[in-house]
Amino acid sequence: MVWFRIACGVRYDIQGQENLPSGPCVIQANHQCEWETVFLQVMKPPVCTVLKRELLRLPIFGWGLRLLRPISLDRSKPARAMKQVLTQGVERLGTGLSVLIFPEGTRVDPGQRKRYNKSGSVVACRAGVPVLPVAHNAGERWPGRHWVKRPGVLRVRIGKPIETTGRMPDEVLAEVEAWIETQLQEISDVPRPTSR
Image (cartoon, rainbow, N blue to C red; front, side, top):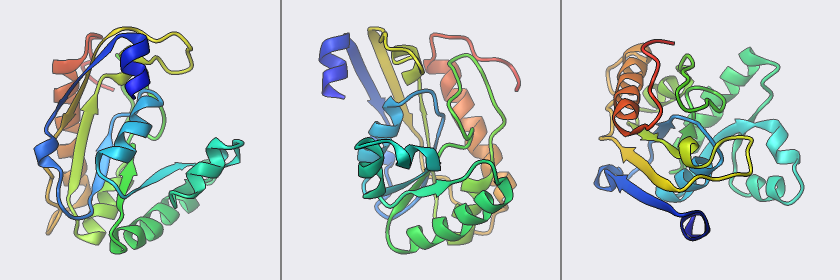
């Protein structure tokens, strides 16, 4: 992240670090590029990431990922993947790890929108831990699938933890999505679509 700032002329504007809870939580953030996968690992350690199984097969990088005890999913089997997220997510939270889940499921280019998945909210409700919403515009500085990086301001907003006790996952997910989308409208240089 320091290299990205120095070599590419990126300035960071990170707000809301005072909202980080002391205990484990489910972190839900929009997913635009590789940058946030690194940032969110160090934002509130220790954290376990839900990711696609193929990443663990990459030489060196994948081997390092295994040490972080991720929840690796086979996306060709969605029903099994959902069960795995629910079981292992609650287990990891019980050991004191926070769980990082990108509710869009995959990278979404700035200015695009995809349906949010409720698995993160279900895990949080079952474990009785808060959801920590995070919004950022990293894809505008570090475009996915491109080598060229763009100078400018990379903005990150960390929201107040959303309580899940006594609430339904759909209700929690609606609050998470509304918060992230509102923040993205304010911090993005690329206009947001009005609906998905």
